[in-house]
Image 1 (cartoon, one colour):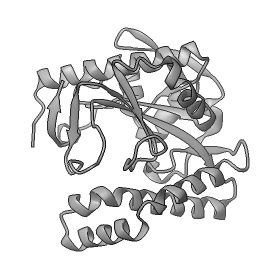
Image 2 (cartoon, one colour; image 1 turned 30 degrees about the vertical axis):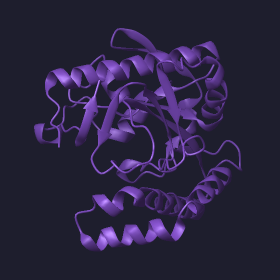
Image 3 (cartoon, one colour; image 1 turned 135 degrees about the horizontal axis):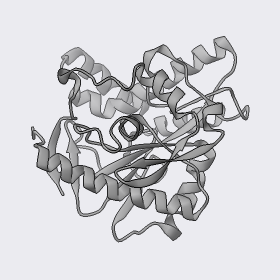
Image 4 (cartoon, helix red, strand yellow; image 1 turned 120 degrees about the horizontal axis):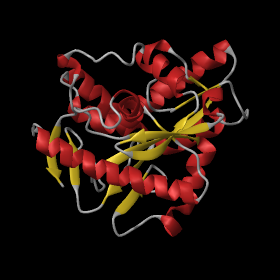
Amino acid sequence: MIELDGQTLKRLQQAEFEILTEFDRVCRKNGIKYSLTGGTLLGAVRNGGFIPWDDDADVSMLREEYEKFKSVLERDLDHEKFYFQDMAETPGYRWGYGKLRRKETVFLREHQEDMPYEQGVFMDIFPRDGVPDGRIARKLHTLACFCVRKILWSAVGRHACKSGTWRMWYAFLYRLFGDGIYRIYRMLVRASNRNGATELVRALTFPVPRGFPGYRREWYDGYIDIQFEGRTFMAERGYKDWLEQEFGDYMKLPSEEKRKVHPVVEIRL
């Protein structure tokens, strides 16, 4: 296990900022809307840039914007420096969201050593898909998202879980579904967007915290410019409501024991 010291963490953030800047360039060139999200959005609002202990960068996009972004990558991405991964593009990839990565780097998180694809420094790109409007349909949708997420994660969970019983369970799920989980995920994406502009949206294979079924689509009706590390990026117009739902009192600093980075087994910048 590698403990990231302050200097290494700063260099990692600089590489992630370079990825974010390239992502923004491609999006603005093509009129594609996105929002900083997660700790990156929180850092923009509370710190004016990276949260000092944060080791990743995150953006979100409505599904139609995500697909548009993917459609222009071959033409507009700087392929000498960057590459894109998601389940449709990368064999063996097990995350229901994309990653834009920096070439000639390595950022290997614990228990992902056996994943069969390149693992450079990355930025997560979360597509936002529809959540059904009906109460019962929402509960079933939440359950479907949970199950698909766990089956996808079984590739990691069969090694990562401390409990031998759970490792066996995830190994069973991994063998049972195999590559069939990709077809199931595509079916979930289609079903989630079948009914047009639903009231709520979410990332299908990433949990929505604090018991909420999703985020209000109206928060994404418009976008504003926001400063992050001295540069202008985009944020959804309802970003303050998003932050409050996601983090509660988001301007309050967490306790020191909660200021953690992800376990890393190899890093090369």
